[in-house]
Image (tube, rainbow, N blue to C red; front, top):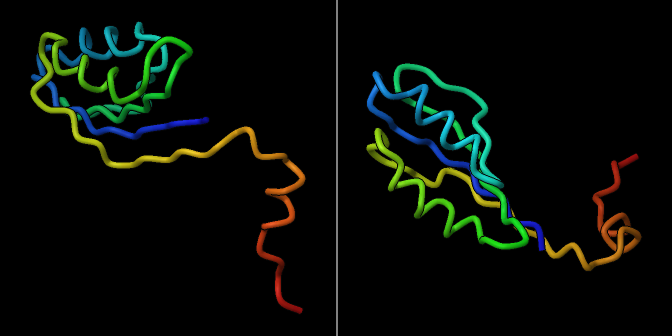
Length: 93
């Protein structure tokens, strides 16, 4: 199963860089953009930890004020690639 969560993290502006460092140091966490204490993050399941657990742990990083889930995508990777290709919408002619 692939599980990806997009989050908006609000951090104390003076601690933004240390928060970014902490998030990037976690397996499955990645910072994509930041401005004025607002940080765009994706979190993915790892072999040892679910994304939801990682998000809950983010609340413990010094300097983080809030973590808001803004996007969630999951899919079963056991389905064959051929099956998903067959389910694609075909353009109308």
